[in-house]
Length: 509
Ligand code: B12
Ligand code: SF4
Image (cartoon, rainbow, N blue to C red; front, side, top):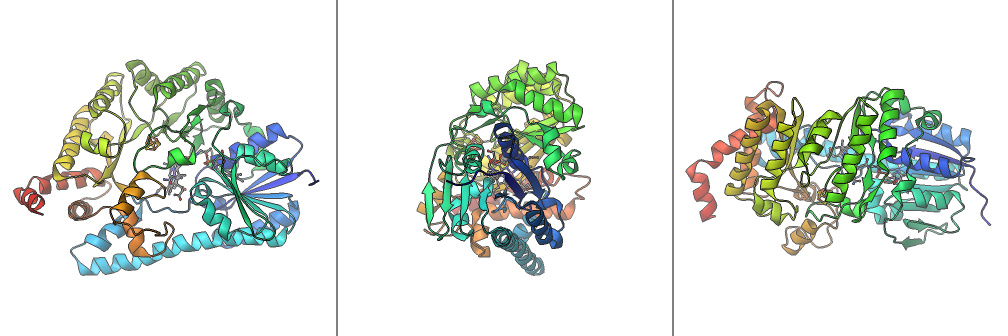
């Protein structure tokens, strides 16, 4: 009979500093279910690189935990956008008309790939260090990176490790209960190194996720207060029933939407706001409001927040399918800080990416925000530019819609993000690009080959070059502090697209 677990050390593997919501929900849940277990959270994102090994060593040696549970958020981080240097590098490398800039970009790309590879190698080294220092402890690894690349992590992790795919609450509970009746979706690498795979659907009942007890979290997590001035992630539901071509959130969280109790979500926001001084919240759902049911759920949360008079700015990924004038008003009244959403101005692209909404209806929904009293909230448009099926005509349609939004909200409030589809494993777009021969069968999504990495950022010629050059020109012409680079890029792109030669080149290509 395995001895019951008395102590768990959670180790959040390093990322660019961001609130470690996932591991906090898991630790809070375990505490509520098994209050006698001693838990601690060590967040390596808060420890300087050179001190991380020592910090891990000290915590393991002092605490002697029965379980060391790692949380791994990012592994494949190439999703360059205008707030990220990698976009300049990719654009220059492939499309700069200046050979010297292409060379410089190649050099910078080596640096980025090196950082990317080194981060992964270091994370596996932390796992091995834990195994050496605590040979009898159970190791666990979970988190979104593992949810996508579970098989890969299982192959590389030390023996006697449970690799938890997807949500962690049930799996972790079964682990602290001795792992005699394992739960959840996981890989188990036993002491001989053999790997067992136990698939399972995401089915944790989210009504069991009551408002986080932050007083407890503050006690077990010395870094907690470091995040309070930043944006804190709050979860309201899991799952997404849509099938957008480029997205795997529905695979990470499951296709079936499950909801937390609105009062518990609002209580969590209230506690963060009134007891801990938090001013900024990101609702970390795959989509904050998407289906009709989830829109009702959102409304109930907003009602609860308004009743509690919370004073926060909040955002999250939004779809506007079922927005009503009333909900738009409640969103603004409860502190909506920005509208973040996928955007293309062409119904053909909406349909070819199976985004599952009607563009005219989306534009009507924007008007509801305007009429409900929009003031300075930014409209952030994540545009899957140059997706399969994109033509000069669809791009121009997108530009026209953006201009409509400028007129509606004021140019300065609309931020078109220069964004491309990142091809992710097991998505419909990956299947399509494999069948079309754009990607080679058996390619490695975690490759360090810069040419494959580049291909995973889908921006093929000829439009790819046109967009990239517009972006590079915008960078050259504009001071980023006086003009937003996405707006400048779209303007230059429009000028180029309206030149008759482009249409001619396109139609004769
Ligand atoms: C919201 C979100 C954001 C927001 C975060 C806002 C905020 N302040 O929190 C924003 C927009 C800022 C963002 C940015 C980025 N993100 Co993001 N983001 C998400 C999203 C949608 C939800 C993440 C989340 O917080 N979920 C809620 C929490 C509660 O769940 P969780 O962390 O997954 O934890 C659960 C499980 O993973 C598990 N678990 C977690 N830890 C542990 C530990 C153990 C021991 C166990 C057993 C289980 C376990 O249990 C938890 C509870 O069930 C995911 C996609 C998704 N649907 O998951 C992408 C995702 C995490 N992001 C991703 C990426 C790449 C990024 C960026 C690098 C994008 C970019 N190019 O800039 C940046 C990096 C930010 C950073 N500093 O690290 C990737 C990471 C995986 C990968 N591909 O490498 C994801 C999976 C999306 C994707 N396309 O692949 N992101
Ligand atoms: S893009 Fe949004 S709506 Fe579409 S599948 Fe992903 S999470 Fe769901």
